[in-house]
Image (cartoon, rainbow, N blue to C red; front, top):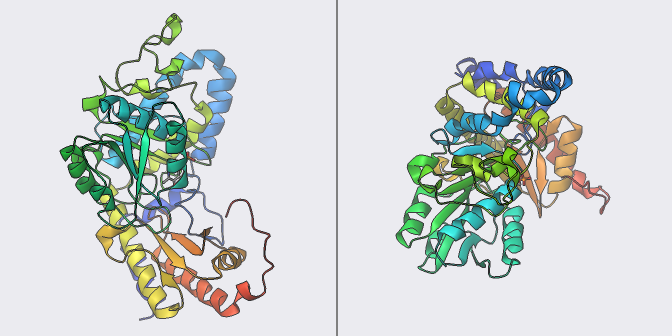
Length: 410
Ligand SMILES: Cc1ncc(COP(=O)(O)O)c(C=O)c1O
């Protein structure tokens, strides 16, 4: 049996195969970048149109009440909660992941009773470090302790001076997965709180925020959750903190009585206090349609399929593309749902793949990043993509590409 026949057999018995039909995917494209931007759900366009024409166009301002706009950040948060192992009432959808990071880091330090040190990985996603840098510029705010990228470095960085540990659950470049439960255990031992960035794990691998005892978490909805370009992010605060935790971006949507227009800020009860300003109602419509897809699938089956797709990709790369260095962990419990491949001509390889209908992405300095989103990818897609990759490598585009003309978004 050929590799492609084997893949067809796997697709035939894939328990989540039917979910692919719930997406609007262009013909002739193998989409291996759902870890950066998921495709639209088939129902997204009509849901957005309804939000614009009926709710906004007909209902106008009365839709804040009549169409339930006011409740959207929390209602959508509850829909996401079950995908990240959280009971209802602890997740809100609002702002960007970067902004939510600022809120929860500051909130964790307010709870940390005078401890000012935040431990983070030097190689975490840049916005996480940038937000820490911004927060450090507020007088007296925090001191950042950067640690290495080896397993255990975060745990080793924790001591009694630490107020919060910032963890990227899955590394954006290598897909290395951190054992979040172990980090939480160590952090709590020394009296520190854990802020988890689950942008690269939500909707791709198991996330169990409540069970692991995570204190705060943030994540994107435009990656594996398919909410659309720039769709609002989510923020999780464990219910045990929701009475004491406050955050500094104290805008009116997080106020307990916003329409009382009082002089002083008073935080709303529950997760609503993590909102800031007016939410993006039209963008919520696309996200809502994307979340419908998750109602029709078994989350555990989706996660298992993602890992099977990665196994297949790694096998095929070993067989057919040995000149690429796999920079991602090979063991299932240690990795996310994308694979990082190092190659000197990575940027030109990604461009050449795109020209042949295979969309992946490039990450500095030399990484081809291949995302395997289990909701809509087929096993045959992985086989076909590796065939195209083999052709591209044989064609050696990096030897003739002009230098210095890279796109803004890579
Ligand atoms: C791990 C991680 N955190 C945060 C972000 C940025 O999120 P946002 O653009 O919503 O601020 C990204 C974007 O790719 C990311 O990969």
